[in-house]
Structure formats: C-alpha cells, structure tokens
Image: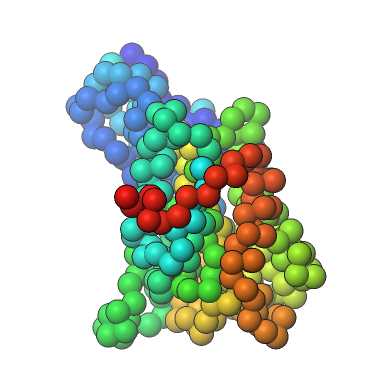
Length: 76
Length: 220
C-alpha cells in the first residue's frame, strides 16, 4: 500500500485545497500520471501518482483543505 | 524551444501548451516557452468566482466574447491583442521546486522588462502581479503537473484596457489596470517588446534556447 501525501509545493505554504480528482477510488492509476489537483491562492499543482496500481481510497474530497504531509489517498 | 505563436485563440494555444507539458514530462523536449497574443477572452482560475465577471452572459456572447474556466491559480483576467502572454513549460528542479518562488521569477521578468522602458514597476505585498503607481500592469497565474509548469504571465503593452472594466481583475473590485502604451503616452512596437520580455524570461528561467519556432511550424 502506497500513501499519497501532500508535498511542500511552496516555501511558507503549509496547506492547499483539493480542486480536482483525476481518478476515482477503484480505478487503475499509473505512476507519474496526474492523480489529484491542488490549488493555493496563486497556483494549481497536479500531484502525480507515486505508484502504479489501484486507487484504493481517497481520503479527502474536492474543496477540502489539506495540510503538507497529510495523506490524501492510498494506492494498492 | 521558444514558440512565437503570434495572435492565437486562447483555446488553441492552451492545447499546444498542454502538448508541450506532456512532452516535457516524458523528457521528449527541453524546457520551452510560448510567447503569444490572444484574441479577446476572459479566463477564470480554478478558485475564481464567476461573479467577478460583471457583464451579463448574453451581452458577452453578443460580442462573441468568451469566458473560460481554466486550470491555473488566481481569479478572473482578460487577454486580448496588444497584451503579451508568456507560458513557460519548465521542469522545476530541486532546490527550486517552489511554485510561489517560480511565480516571483515571472514577476521579476516583467519588472525588468518594464525597466527597459524606464518604467519603475514593483510588487505589492500580499498581491500577485506587477504594479506601476498602484495600477496593475502584469498578471501571473500558474499551474504545474509533476513540477512541469504551465500558464504564466501576461503583460499589458498596447491592449485595450476597457475590457478590464467588465471584470473584477484577479477578484479585486478596486484594482485599476495599466498598460505600457498608456504610461508612455504612445504605442509600443510589439515585436521589440516581445523580444525584450523574452530576453528577461530566458535569463531568469535559465533558458539558453535561441531557436524560435513560429506558429506555422508548430501547426505543420
């Protein structure tokens, strides 16, 4: 099981909002392809899938605020 | 590579941009940059509020003006002829993997560009973009896919500023816009302006590419 965590995308920015899931739970995902889009007030950031497999669960929804290091999803 | 797409519809340019992002992520191309002008269009960033477009939809469509929702940061802005847009497709590397620092780099390119015309431009704390005497002259809204950047910078050179009165630019209802031509009191040569902005962007972003490809070659 691989955890998908929010990385630091900008110095001094410790949170972002989930703006778009490119995949839903249960779908196959490929390492490196866009998994979830996050947004700060200034930028959008597409976080890639860290592993190939099945997106087991998404732990946050579009619109949710998430913190750096928070687990967003699990890939099996 | 540097792509000078001339005057091009926003959507067509966006498709080319996203294709470059895909190729850059796959390592098929080096860091690249698109420079262009768009036909009149309003775009709203991912977290933007549609209420910041102040003109009713039917009025916009009567004038064939589009409002597009796009995947960048920031709120609503206007693009049109006489405004230079620059979309770097750059793979940000450690330790520069900082999206907001990259955004500041784009602002810096605009500040230096305006300096070439003896215009003293600055940032305003807490706001994005570049300002001259309290008026906004350049806007920045960016996105990244796995640290490969898209969207970017727009600088008002000769553009018709009246379109900005149809929106709350960047979601702010008290912002006044500026253009280089209005500040200088005369039209600015667009080719020269593009060349100057390109020079600063290449310098700041560390692009050593000198090959410029035009629109025909891109679409061929």
